[in-house]
Length: 347
Image (cartoon, rainbow, N blue to C red; front, top):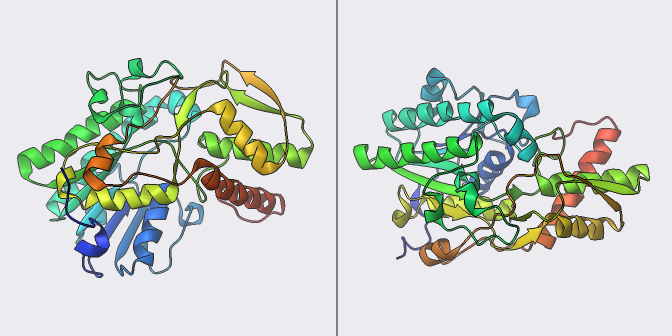
């Protein structure tokens, strides 16, 4: 089972076709806008509800609109003339945010509901939805020695409360728009994306960024310890941002993957303790570890089974974690120093 050869925007679209990216003021959406810009696409419309001054990346030549896509009229404006629509807009963050703000996470279903209908009415050719591994059955993720999750493991459904359920129901919307209306949709389940230009402070950051920041802070302040959420035995796989946006591009343009959820993540499983050790090694410091077992920690283990994506695309995310973490650490360290110097930084 394989899709078209080289399924990417550059081989399918005209350079002046309008690409619309919801959530483009955020981490992944901003990186995707930059990818398409660097490939020579001349009409990219970026949407985010944050003020422009708070966007993580501003890409030259990209039309930037500040609008809340949970409102239908804004979605209709955003999708006007679109050839392809990418929905990466959502209220989300690391486990601290997801576990605390379940209602905000659930309300993101309004974004997908209005955006997919607006894209369909606008006559767009393709629609992409950014789902999550949080859609998987939590009963399969209790142990750190978790078996890698394959796409069929989302059912019988018992998704992560709030965020996971929103993703699973929104996936169903995408599948029904294809089944009932013939509107081509594509769905990727992200597994823990990290890298430069991502959230690194403030409560929405994910583990790699949070741990890098804590190591950098400890070096700067002379602290001797680091606080780890949970017991440190929780396991995860982490995907570098460059692999993520390449995977989005390929999944969106693969005929085999229409209305078919697919894992987009690394299959390299690592414990939180070992992730801390990696960051310590990059920072050249060794810290005492204090474990906050009452802090949000999520499931015991989660990993991506990449059998399907290898079968269909002959590809999977491949940036080694140590390599990606070095780049992430260096970027966060600069952000940290810039903030101390009173300069504007990505939050």
